[in-house]
Image (cartoon, rainbow, N blue to C red; front, top):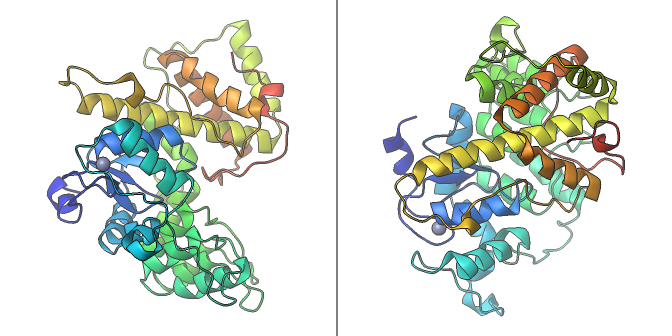
Amino acid sequence: MSRGKVRSVTEVCADCSASDPTWASINRGIFICDECCSVHRSLGRHISQVKSITKGQWSTTLLAMVQHLASHGANSIWEHSLLDPSQSKHGKKKPTPRDQVHPIKAEFIRSKYQFVQFINKQKDGEVNSIDDLSKQLHSCVRTNNLETCLRLLSKGADPNYFHPEKGNCPLHVAAQSGQPLQGELLVIYGADPGAYDANGKTPIDHARTEGHKDLADRLIECQYELTDRLAYYLCKRKPDHRNGCHFIIPEMADNTLDMSELAKQAKKKLQALPNHLFEELAMDVYDEVDRRENDEHWTAAHENASIVSDRQGVPFLPLNPDFSATRNQGRQKLARFNGREFATLVIDILNDAKRRQTGVMSPVQTPKGKQSYNNFFPIL
Ligand SMILES: [Zn+2]
């Protein structure tokens, strides 16, 4: 999509009001400036999923979703209490573009997203149980009211809520109703495009039956988001899902994949990982691909800058408190791989994902037990 179209709805940074923001936080539905983006990145993808508006690889509907949210007041969800001075007891104020990144902008951004200090925490009656919120979400996704759905998700509504009376999940409803942007939002928050309803049908089936072909195709793409992103990182191509091709396995440019004894052993260990640990490793590699790509986009934007502060870089994956210490260590070690070693790991993972044919590996992470792949497949 052209830069012009993007700019028409992205007037200022959602955090500091600087003009012409060039990054988006997808799960927050906002646009942000370079400086604020550096803080978002340092918090990790579990807090904010950032992507360059101009350099990132976007699906049309995902970008449309962020634009819709940004232009329909998604930011007021995250700044609810700041908008009402009578409620504001903490005395926090929004930074201005000229404030320093550290500590002023950084502290504000942490309060706003990591500690969600400014969202509306008032409970009105009984509507705040997770069940009630999820039922509201289930009903709301048939409309195009994205910002209400984001508000419900921000309060803890379950994107995979199985409605006991209706026998399906919010994504089935969005797919049936032909709501592609709701579909994007639900998937970003972890909804499973392959989930079955009470009749054994997936959201993809429903989109097809109702004649929403583009939505069905997009949901299939979402199912393969993880492996598609890994392949795209290496070869700038994606598989043609419409024609039944679901995996691309890139080759090393010089065709000299490491066939040493050590490399063979590593492959064997990878193949021996139980599925859930393999998925964890693949998700962590996905996060590392995201970090490396955003780093490239960041550096490209600052080529002419004389000084880029060290504090604006993200040298390895930030700590995710939902994960075990061992897994966090494994995640951080991924940054030590040089380009060639990392490409080899990505290719091994793509090969093994295809072999396992799991396909459905949402990059949205859920902590799973105390075991970690590092116990079986030591990284470095
Ligand atoms: Zn900003």
